[in-house]
Image (cartoon, rainbow, N blue to C red; front, side):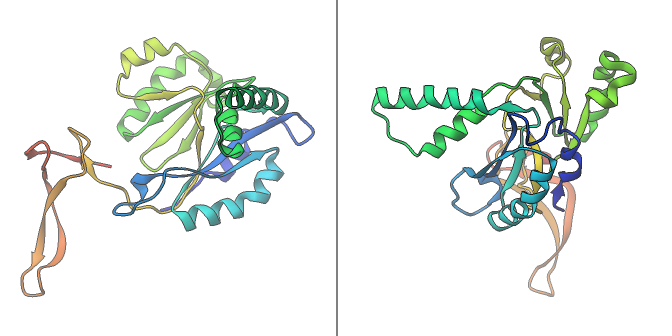
Amino acid sequence: MAINNFEKIKKFFYFNEANNMFFHCQIVQRAKDHRGEKVREGAIKTYFIRSREHLEKVMPEIVLLCEHYKARAYINVTGKDFDALQKLMLVKLASDIHQGLIRNPRKCLNSAAGELKSRNPKWIIDIDNPEDEKLVIDWLRPMWNIDFDYYVRRVPTKSCCHLVTPKFNLMEFHKKFPEIDVHKNSMGTMLYCPDIEPVLKCSVCGGTHVQTQAWVNPNHNNQYVSDIEGRCWCEDCEQEVKLTT
């Protein structure tokens, strides 16, 4: 099922086109969403979103491109300044010229926009296992108490969710949840993702050379009926394992 967080993301806006600010939004193609295909990973298109109305205007185009390329749209929900972006681009361009590097200026622009710090930074807690979500929320809740729903926002993803939060004690968090990633100034959270078939992998080594047992109908050319639950094999580990996406 496709994920469309358009209505949720609109609530993050705290400025409009009259301000010197933007949300950095990218449509990104990922190899893991294209099993058996050779695709080049990276940004297909970049947007500098100025307001809720601007996002509403370009959203149909974003959905169209994501569906066509089987790509995902991410948006950084902390506003960044255009004047700071211009200054950082000048630094990067000057560095390229000094080193004799020639590259597409669009790459310089995307690099600067991604690297640029926000006035009001937010962190993204990337939760892949639904069982971890409540544990993380229970750990975070005492920090903001009755204002928790204002400071911590849940954004659905393909595997589970992103929790968008203010800064907190990262060292203490990793002691409690060493397997959960926290992204500080990444490409942001998910805006749109088409209905992409998940890639199954070994829960031990993360490899995709896996097999699962299944019931088949021998009277109909071994037609697939259903999986045999819990019986999976990893060719790399050479043992029975559980599968994960």
